[in-house]
Image (cartoon, rainbow, N blue to C red; front, top):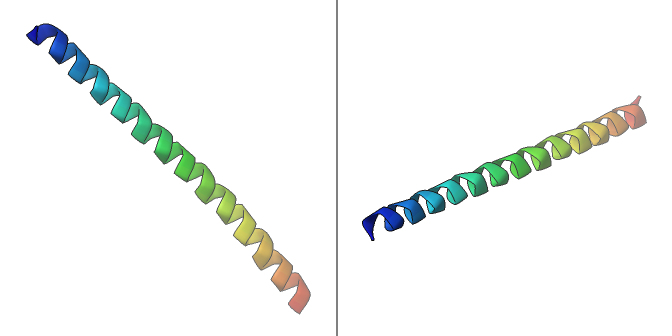
Length: 50
């Protein structure tokens, strides 16, 4: 009984770690896309001014 409960707990921890890793990579991807977008806007504004 205890051995199977321990295995289930380890499985849950692993899933949580994978989920957190997934969220972090998604957030990182969004952040890089935003940065690219913002840089494009800055360049466009710069071009308009000069």
